[in-house]
Image (cartoon, rainbow, N blue to C red; front, side, top):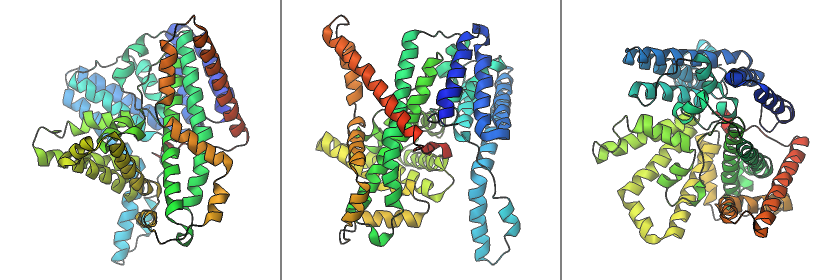
Length: 475
């Protein structure tokens, strides 16, 4: 069930809010648990059993750690979560590569192909990482094991962030699971955040997708430098507004129910290095890998060479986390390579060069690697990147005229503007004003009108059935 679908917006969400606010305080977690399981079952059917089993195993693992058998509880959690993640997400990848190797040796692969048809459950990368972080934190003593299964299962299955994040650690909402308050200001803030996220998806990301799909599917003999760069820039906007839009909606929904989920994006396209980019892009995943993998490997405490090796391991797994494909792996490793080069001295040069050149370098590095992420094969990615620098190719301006409609141009301009902190600065400026002043009242009125306008335009796009699944659903 998509957040941008009519059945969610006009049926599931209003019904859930009504039942939740009518329910007594002691029953609110149970209500959220049941409705969240219903939300997941709507699209995944019997695979809901997997997430219930995941919640049960990690709940028991926490209790085992609490009883004193710390290593046993941790091993149980890690073994179960990594096993289901590897089987459901990576068995197709492993067996398809195995089949290719066997075929090179003229070995029959009929039986092997049967093992490759495994369905990928939605959100498995997100909820397995969440539950693993819980047991690791209990093992480390950072949090106490939750003895209430309803509370813990609610944490695991919360529908706002269940399918595509942000990755909410138990410590983020531990207190709110046990005792949270809802208020009109918090609810209003949640509604505002949800509308902004919906507009990001429907108005910007989906319009960029129309341009991106056309250019990336263009035959090589019809592409050119201008067209391919336009395609990759549009894709950089598409994936940012698509994923940050989902995160905004998830955070907004959380506030409506009294939860404060962590931020997941902080204007990554103003970063001055790839290292800073990963502090701003998919923040909850970056911090997860830093706290639970990079530091566990030794971080930067075991010498320079080991630090670089640890970085490559982290970004290899970062790529693999995004998908079972060599394209994702190479994309992850390429970002790790950029960070190592920055640590070798490039970062110092960029600091001396100034903010403008540093941001340009980061955008160049990010956009050169996006085709690897977007392409189905390494060959397709290589051909696309090669065309980005093929200055001898002739530009097909008829093709540009077809795709660059007034609507698309306006969307690209909006994407450029709102990929910078202009909205945040506007909110900060309003907060700094005297609430009794005319300027404050006028700006608040304009803000409310703007939000309703965004919601209305988003509904128009939804009514025309012009939406695509969120990009990160596949991960």
